[in-house]
Length: 195
Image (tube, rainbow, N blue to C red):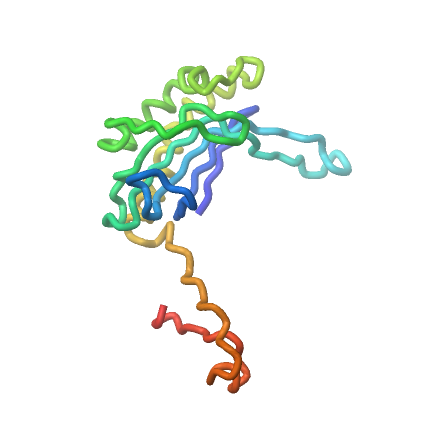
């Protein structure tokens, strides 16, 4: 699921996620699932056609990220890996910052952050020339609606309706001459109940 909130030059995207880190740090070896929120810059292009044509709008470079994640080995909805990335270097997030208040009461912590977008943007290194005052006031005004969307997604993760594990990968092709190959199949297919 994905939700987006756009202002003038700033926007918020929120989505459920099942994350497998190919190079995990110690203590983070298991996959993570939960909800990711990103504060992103918004780019509006000129209409592509007549004056009635739609205007391309893109949520571009992220400037702040909140990962309300838990280990896939923990009960769904556990946020034992909740963290945020206060700053990006281009498209790459900085290091994870674990904050006790974020894990203890993620929705209140998030509401507090969104209520003061100026502080978030300053920590993120976003210049005042990149956004407008309307972005800050719009984000602060929309904070309750954004937090509500995050809550719905967290509830969906907790109920195991969102952030599902990716389907199991199929086993490697059957060796030449096997029963599967002689029956005309090169790969065994697992039924959903066998996965």
